Length: 208
Image (cartoon, rainbow, N blue to C red; front, side):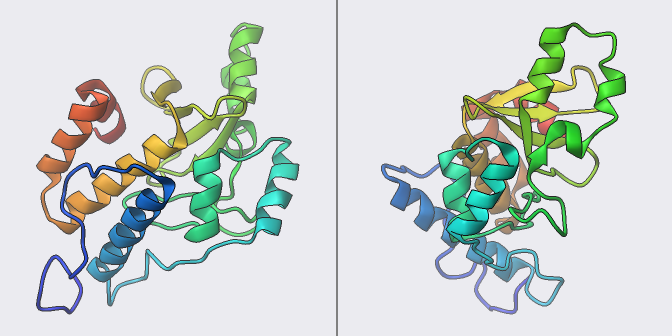
């Protein structure tokens, strides 16, 4: 925990769903949560260092993917970059640690796992782009190229692809709640907030 005598640190948001009327409201909330999370890990290996990327880097990534990033994900990387918070987001760069990439490139053995599935199932996997690495255990968050809908790829428990959020924005909001629960040392309250908005089934699949 950070060295400040006051905890949570000044400016840390309450553990609750805020009213976010504009993208600017969301940006301010994200920044406050991430700053408090960085204070939580002060003195340890840094997990929340702002490293925004350039428009050029995003464009190069979109050219590699042959699709545009969802608006919320692009805005997040342009302002904050890839951060390791309660979960790790993938990087815009193609080099280094866990890049944003097609699911079939991130987990190529899926092709063998799907060889007895019909063509429609394989096409769904082909349309998935990984943007979040969960906890480094091989389970990943992906967005669907055309719609931006977020799926959870779980390689070892039941269905491999699970629809989770209607947008990357919903995922990022939920990630901030997870960070706040850690900051406020109240995991149960964080789980309750997630379940109230997204259902206990989703929370159970995601975090258990």
